[in-house]
Length: 414
Image 1 (cartoon, rainbow, N blue to C red):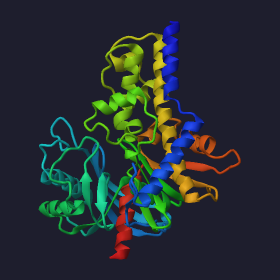
Image 2 (tube, rainbow, N blue to C red):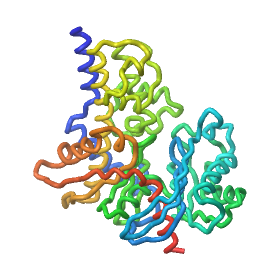
Image 3 (cartoon, rainbow, N blue to C red):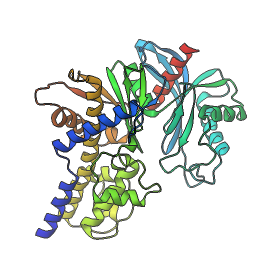
Image 4 (cartoon, rainbow, N blue to C red):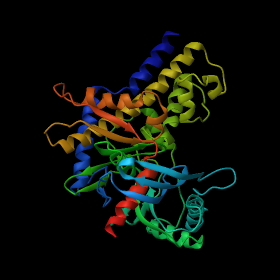
């Protein structure tokens, strides 16, 4: 029993990050962001979005499309300025189920975009005059707010014939094929950018947008460029990896790719936890989900129900503690990266009180994660003499509402 306790404690400690490690990560993240901004070699990007921040007074009814993970969502949204917004209609469908798979290499680009257009048609309720904003959460080459070309897929999507093509161009062609020629895609943006736009529209003083759902990414408003910059933060390589992170990376479809995302994103957290469980229990562990992890620590499921074999009460308690450690590490990594950008924006003048706009299951469904992110910033990373409060602002409709706001902003420029 003593050896088991020692093994469990050492594993939990391996997942913990000290204040010194978090501050070092924040400095590394800031340097990589500034190197990317300057066009130097970096594990981060500084992709221009050509979108500034909204005033909060934009108004009108727009279509919003959100595609960046396991589902495609189309919404009809009415922006009402000071009165907020109303999601009038929302349609969501998975990219993959028992009847079809629109993520695999045997799917054509035309088939994928026809599937998306059919969802838009349902949300729009037919062929009507609408401007559409498209939240497309993959790495793109962007030269205007209106459209961009896919650089490469991620998140296990492998549909050929899309890389190098203008995304809104492909969407427009599919809309026309679906008889929706009156719907005009006018903006393309990343979900982190959409989340930041949505938060600012709702009068939160925000400069950083984060998504931590299936994947992970960050953006921020760069005053020098007067626009939001997409960091493609999944690729950051400055976080201390454990042996379990390396196992997950080696087993992924793209080893070496997106190392930071594999320590934070919902697509991978359960795999990290499964690797930890396997070493702890010395058994083969079946696949489970991040939702299963949350239900385990909340008492909704037992370890036996998830693992398929009996464990002792002590092992159940320790497994819960290891799950909490995996979640806590993800939260603190987000906090440290956020502080890296906050310090870049402060430029030595002190961080000002503000919100960080976040969308995704990690902050919306896992109890305590927002506080852990705030603590990583305000307690571990800030100097003891600073007393600035940073608030995490979860934003459940961020990607869709932000797409509608981007469509509104683009209309002002047309």
